[in-house]
Image 1 (cartoon, helix red, strand yellow):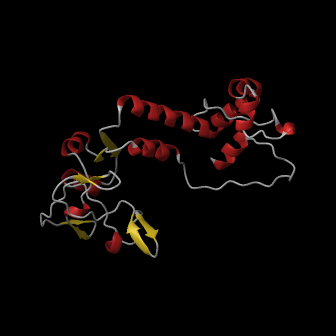
Image 2 (cartoon, one colour; image 1 turned 90 degrees about the horizontal axis):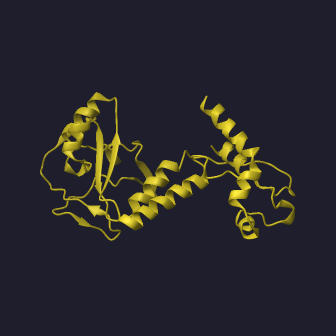
Image 3 (spheres, one colour; image 1 turned 135 degrees about the vertical axis):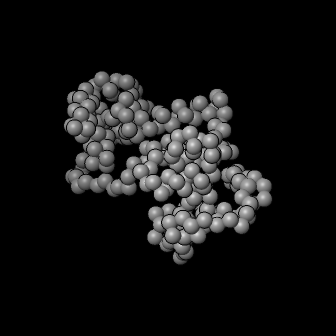
Length: 227
């Protein structure tokens, strides 16, 4: 039903290109910016407007709005990620300690593992090194105080220590009874990450075969197979 509704909306946009084009491409420079660099293609491009939620123009508009808010009010203070889970074991662990993994040599097949050069490493950089005080690194990312308490817990069959604890807020974890990751924001990168993450979609590749002299651009057609 979702696809049916979406196709209906896209059909409306395709059949009302004159109205859409009047809003987006009102001059020669606008046409050139849209990729209409050949005379016979001027006015032939099929436009997918920013009013269609989730398309590239909508993503760009929302990202620019977010950057404008940061420019006006400054960077956020906290970056809070909430994840609900139906795993009762994980829920009990979350309330005591926000534990990552195990991964690395303890579990090379963990989803967080990625290849860097010839070796695998955790993309979230666990286990984290111990730190006596909170500081920032050269990339202005926060390095939280992480003391060597000597404590160990068994999590998913592995013995983990304080190096595996995810930054968390005990009050929020108890209040919402779910997995909540709390990070301090040192730069505006958190805002960029948020919008890139939400709109990145799944991994995909789009291709088609067409005549060599057919240079027309159909943004709706590009969006649908890609989606």
